[in-house]
Length: 110
Image (cartoon, rainbow, N blue to C red; front, side, top):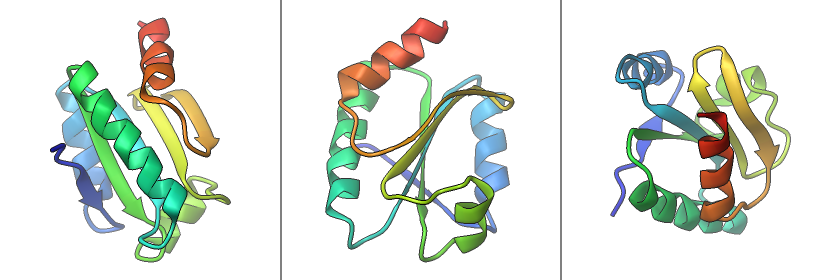
């Protein structure tokens, strides 16, 4: 099973910084425990983690991290952001996306 990194306002910047230092592609998934589509997206992210190397997946519970939710303009769940570098957003959108489509987005940016 994939080791998703649970983040909140206290550890978000630290974990994000670690991922960028390691030259990882970063996926930030915003969701909540009671969101069924959020769980579906997690399954796709587990599959993606098996397909790609150098990937860090940060999980934000919107109920536990309202400031991050607002900072990243999250209005629907699940919302996913993909970063290749700190200032280079590859994707920011809501809904469930297939692992193969996420992989294409990431590989296209290389």
